[in-house]
Length: 411
Image (tube, rainbow, N blue to C red):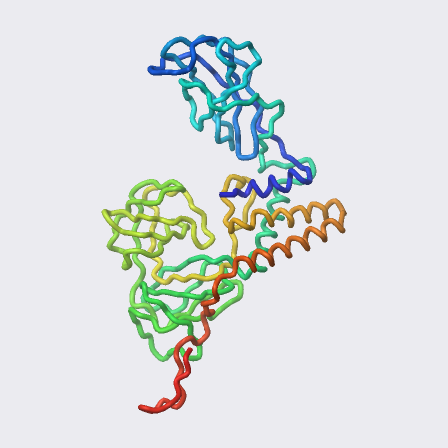
């Protein structure tokens, strides 16, 4: 999955405006017992580097000579530096000389033991390319690049009419109006308590008295200003269930135990854990499972035990306009956008860099290319048009509906 830093790297490598890189790591190496080791006996020298998603550090100080015998291996200890994900240990061949490391072994944890012949071949780097994407470059600050990225994402999103997504809100018995999280270009399908609700017109809504129902008649967008308000008719008959987690959650967990699965009406649906919107596939054995994390422009987050979990009994699918803005420190986050956008977004950032350099002709060409590529992407990714914007009348209409007579007009 492409990260935010991948977009910044694509731009900074072309300007060029590379930020500082990680320093060489510290490392300790020693021979250790390793039953069944197949590492050839002999003497070795070792240096250690670390890698982040954008490159590799300079090597550590070379180890002293290490003598490995039968059923022995080489233990590498090197704490991961910030943003680094992989430790790489370069070794000489058995009985090699100092400075002749040409094979390597990788690990994502420290310490680790080399007890088999290395399968990777290469020499240590001569310069660090493990760039720190959240740091300032020589020409542009990290905050400037993030601002350009947010502009690019917003322009892309509006140009294609939004990003298809799910979201929802908890209902309150008798309440007809609900503020949608973010703003949506289209809200095409809405469900309440698992029942599909058709789009309607505000003028058709009954306002004389509160009428609560387990199956709603229609929904429309009543306010679209700094907030987007959905109005339902009739009013919900129940308040959404609320419970809490009973275990800590990581940002990648797909299940969590909760206090009361009976608080939810639907066996599968949508919920909010803390501020994060999720879809769940089942409620069994005291657990909410089959989670799809970070929907509706929220972010998959680590949550402690006791975090509030709220049922989203009014939920919808549509094209979301609102994007969660990125800021320095987010380079390792997955880019919350369709895969095809990764190749197009750098054009906009490069255009802004050229504009800052007063190369207006190059900037204009890059911006033009950006919008042309958006149009191509949108054309290539159009599905079959089957949706109707909430607010229109999609039901079957009848003219002069007299028993046994009239003309039926399909909706």
